[in-house]
Length: 236
Image (cartoon, rainbow, N blue to C red; front, side, top):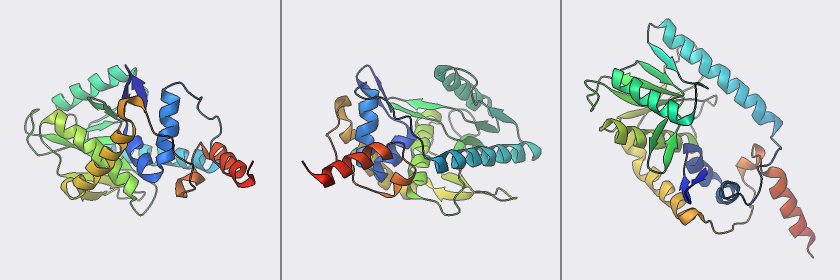
């Protein structure tokens, strides 16, 4: 989440975070407004999970290359604007796989793990793209569906045709991926996104309370929220 010219720019994780914890939205927006610093603490388990996730994604991309597909990896290749332009150029050229590209439209910016070309006509030609997300979990969570829906919405606007499916790639030798029809989750996604946009209207957010939730286990704000609850429990 970033504040640009007093307008909130949203990322895919902002949508899934809002579903998980409304207070997290309030905290992240306050950071973007310069009202508080980012917390330095990070859950040790999250660091390990992130490293395992990066390895899983790297193995998946290696698998695609070994399958004979052309893979363009844009990880850490330049500025945000450069990656946006390179992603657009690669889509227009029909590159088979675009890893860590960027999709932008209006107040939204998405960084999908991978975009893969499919045989469905778009404004680019006789092809278009669908979004893939590499996840360690064997069971797909609502947060993952929301993030993929975010990417799929951006893809529809950029390529002029909505993708039919969005994909989750779990660990495994085959890397087959599990498909989810975009239209089946579109209404749910629009509802959560609308609630997030309402909460961030005009760069403002109504103050919320740090109610405990499952996201607390990996949230960088845990210590601050936990300290607030403990103070309130003790009373004046």
